Length: 266
Image (cartoon, rainbow, N blue to C red; front, side, top):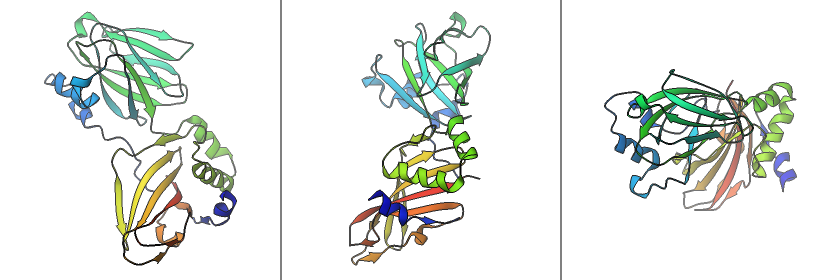
């Protein structure tokens, strides 16, 4: 199956905008007029169902700002998925920080004078990620917060930079077909359905494999018409596309197939 698919890959020569989480809360910044309850509802989706011991995961891209609600009196655990936090920088006297050097995670709580004030910290990781976190203290129990990268790491950058270009593209395509994530890549499930309609075809991005210079995309293609259609990879080409592969070329009415696409951000 994989060999047949790879042999049919159409190698051609991205979507320029990266797929990142929509963070409306970032607009609050460090305003003194933050409605803490409303912000907590935005971050956790439902304050009434808030579980203080549940793991909260926040997807974030490099150099993106994210607002996180934390406990105002207890240590809050923050870590980065598949990575280690190396350095934390912020306002002197705004927080108390304990670092777990072995696990690469931090435990943080606001100082007495910042228990009712938002403050910012900058986090740098071993894999080269950089995040700006706006921490909003609220009278809740301690939280455990996982940061999930939306951007490829240094490992992905080295692989893309040092390897054979065509072999890298073929390897990325093979990984997507096998539902595996290449080392250093960020696996992104779009939280909003991205739909396009083209010649009675409904096209939805279902997964994104984000590296440094390359991005893999898995798209669902549905025949919305009342007649069978023949699909060709070149129908889905646009500038910066590097490879395309369809699972099925003949699509009956109301049936769907998968399209694998590699695009370049350079």
